[in-house]
Length: 118
Image 1: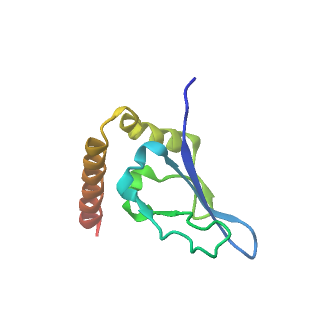
Image 2: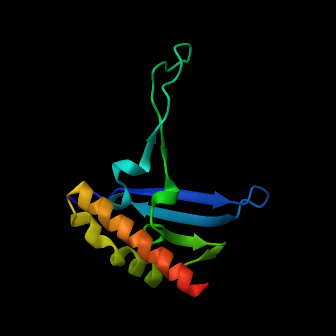
């Protein structure tokens, strides 16, 4: 059985409850460097010693953030599928060092593209 793991992120307007952004990030975009360990809970906390984490979303390339809804507008099914298919090759990249290197290169390319558009 094929297992697909993804993370969902949702922004909405508090007043109207309208969804402004709905983003999906496939699991294959996550590497250990993107997870920031937090301090353990204090000894007086109900779950004393528990250690949480933060996901450093700014370290994920834009191509890894697949919008279903962007700025309040639904994306087309074809665009969503196209965005998924562009990076599906990362699923088969087994080595975490290689995957980290590829993600760094993707981020560099995105920065270059942004600079040339300005």
